[in-house]
Amino acid sequence: MRKFLALLVIGLMLAATGLAVAGPWGGDVAPQHGGAAIDLLRFLATQGDSRAQYDLGFMYEGGKGVAQDYKEALKWYRFAAAQRNGLAQNNLGLMYANGQGVSRDNVRAQMWLILAVASLKGEDGKRATEYRDIIANKMTPARIAQATKMAADCVASSYKNCN
Image (cartoon, rainbow, N blue to C red):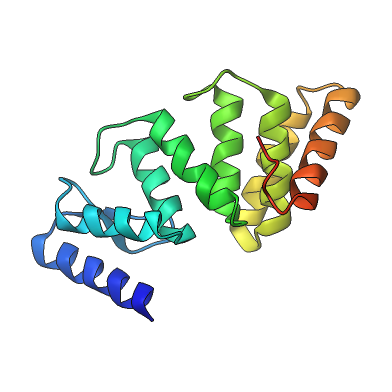
């Protein structure tokens, strides 16, 4: 209930100021110029809210309301991904595939995309599957097997051994 109220407050603050951008799951969630709303979002993220963690990663990756910072985006996506947030897992996979904030690593990209496909449904799941397949087409069967084992190890460790 507390999280819902906090997110409602963020939405109302943004609507009142007109400083909102479209969030990854629809609606206006992120301020263009920081302020109290971003502070509240950051507070929720530090309290373990995976949606807020994902949102911060999304904002840092795209420079929406904050300075673009891939390392900071990775940090928040990792926190959210460890809580089985499929969108964060998907975006981690893409960041590894593109070498954004990390060295390009198709095995690690594939691992995160395998996890995302298992977590996501509907259109998000279809996109994650497409991304996974695109990366797989660039890999040898041995490297795909390595990524699959890494994904299984991640799940077996309750997402504690995923890096």
